[in-house]
Image 1 (cartoon, helix red, strand yellow):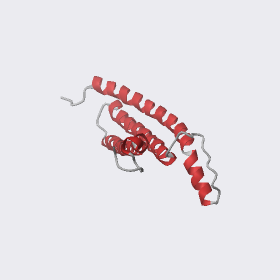
Image 2: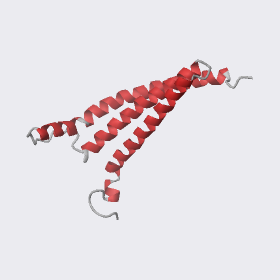
Image 3: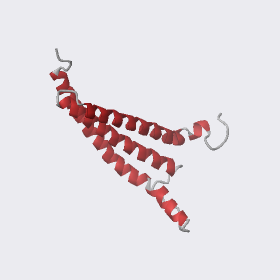
Image 4: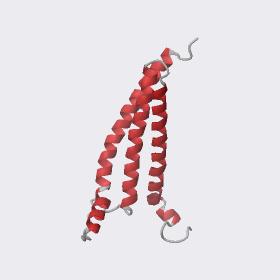
Length: 141
């Protein structure tokens, strides 16, 4: 009696492969977003260190560009980590057997992606919760 059902493994192989592709697509759009929103804080830091105080921003509506850049960057790390985890899971499921190293790699990928998601949420909260909780501006209402 085998603990692996070939039909279930094949279905999971397909799902894992599709999720890996979607995660890589999300990473691609994440690279685009990060290069757009991270341009301002890095440029300001560089110019601030070398005596130029000119503010350069393509996104004037961003109140905290460092937090926005952090959120975009950690979201990008999460997307690549999820892709790695899904590919590792696909390696196990597509082989229709248990591959210990692939399973371990998948678990590590999920762990890194989860920590990156926590960091993304924390950075995003500094933007979205700023007025609700008066972050940096007094006591909450």
